[in-house]
Amino acid sequence: MRFVPFFRGSALGPAEAGSAASQGYFILDGSVYFLGDEMRSELAGIYPSCSLRNAILSVRRLGKSGRLQDPAGDLLEKLASAREQGTGTAAKFVRELYPYQKIGVDWLNFCIRHGIGTILADDMGLGKTAQLIAAICATIGRSPDARILVVAPNPLLENWRREFAFFAPDVVPYLHFGFPRSGLSAELAAHQVVLTAYTTLVSDIRMLSEIGFSLAIFDEASVLKNPESSRSVAASEILSEVKIAVTGTPVENSLTDAWTLVNLVFPSYLGPLDQFRREYVGSGVAHSLSLDLSGLESSLRQITLRRMKKDVLAQLPPRRDIHLPVNMGEAERISYDGIICALKDDVSGGGANVLSLINRLQQFTSHPFLIGNGGSDDCASLAAASAKFELLLLLLDRIAAAGEKVLIFATFQKMIDLLASAVRQRYGVTAGIIDGRIANEARQPLIDEFGGAGGFAVMILHPRTAGMGFNITAASHVIHYSRQWNPALEMQATARAWRNGQTATVTAYYLFYAVSIEERIDERLRQKQELSDSVVSLADEKESDKQLMLEYLGSYGR
Image (cartoon, rainbow, N blue to C red; front, side, top):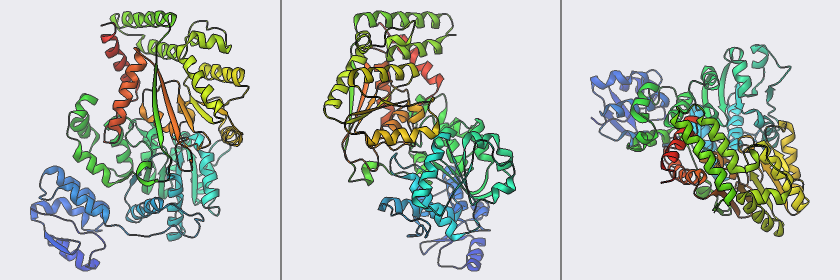
């Protein structure tokens, strides 16, 4: 049986459409299709409103049942492509958008008008915030009484406030964060745009869930990847006509995480979680990779807008990725083997301390001085004790000679301090630092100072603190000194420099020890990156770290 659903916008008016639908006739693009009694009951949700959202749900449900002659993905593609064009941004938006951003705003406006939740998953650096503010302005223009909620990680609240001031100065968001803050839902509902943090969302969910929002936007939505987390539960409890999840890394972890984001913005689209896990997750990543995921990828594509920099920014300069292995010195290798032996012994004894030993190994591969009593922080001693640190200094020498700017990403606070000390000693430069010790309001001024410095300048950042939300296009070099176990974190970090507004070629360096767990991580990260453009990316969780280490220990020394 061939089926294409009717939805608002066909040649028939509402009365005629309702009559035709009740008799089993559905219309799309001027073609009429008949639906038998058996299938008609499954599509009852379309009849009352002829809504596009219900049509999409019904097509997906019938597609999974195998009762569509046409591929469900093709029909969903027709539904998704039948959107209004040129819906605009409204007068409150005072800046000019790039052509691809205008297309993005059209898509967002289309989803908002039809009550369809969506995921804005443009590549990092393409200006997702600008598109969202434009869509907010259009929503306010259509519905002056609209109430809009924007939720973001704490460090990005100031960036959102600045972006509103730049793109739509007449739209002043109310910041619901910190103390004192309102405890009354009626007072909060008086504001048209409310800006809050995920931490506040969780603590104030009882009050916030009493407000009916027209639109709820969840920025950096990868923080909602765990469906059982308090943040994810709170986000699902927000009442809103439309929800939009925003992330530059739409599938950062397991397929369960993808389900969580979709279920937030479009409940029931991918079915119940237990069923989804049985079908796509199974025993883990290896099982998922063995499946034909084209159907799932097609379904996700229908409610997700995803553009890559290379596809839409012809003027963006190229990025070079350079992976730099380095051999350990003799003393380093002896110490490294000692930690590996301790790990093997721990695994043999039940593995109670595996995670703490993994952390110790990560510290050691950053620098041997991070474990034990450490050593002197003078530059010569730091280089003598670590071949990777010595390689870093060689890179910095070249960058300094060229008078260019560099971002260094490192994980541990002690490592960040050692790097800053070495930069000060060797180059007479005070490196800017952004990590968990730096207050949110102090971070942007540090970036501004870095950008305004003449010639060689260094900024040292923690990837989880400063890996998202910041624009640091003054830098043309990015050094990943401490390797992350998730490619999304490294992508986000590199995107601080390689993004809209960058005019120079960006070189990203990935440093790692050869014949070590770091080389295994580098190989795994490259594999993950190849998969990330599809549906699957491997997990960034402690159990995944543990499994990788166990695999490595099993092969070490062979």
